[in-house]
Length: 97
Image 1: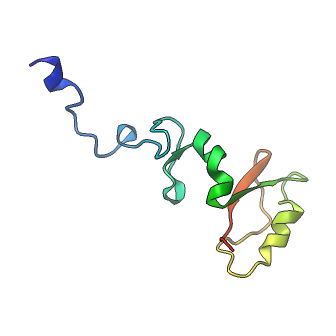
Image 2: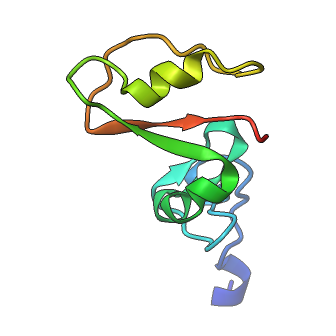
């Protein structure tokens, strides 16, 4: 068996080798949640275009005032409640207006 017969001959129907970023075809740091299938670098680049906003924490353990304002929005698919989030902020997906 030569190299051409063996190269890429193993089926890749599942697992990390079967998935890649839909933008840049990168296989590392893939975000699969909500069917995004984007690497984390491309997600940061296109997050606003998709409809995500980044909510920064003003004090540890509580969402910022902006998130509290969004809680009363009609047709908001997210249940925004006060909860602890680690890190400097979190991404929220909002419906298009």
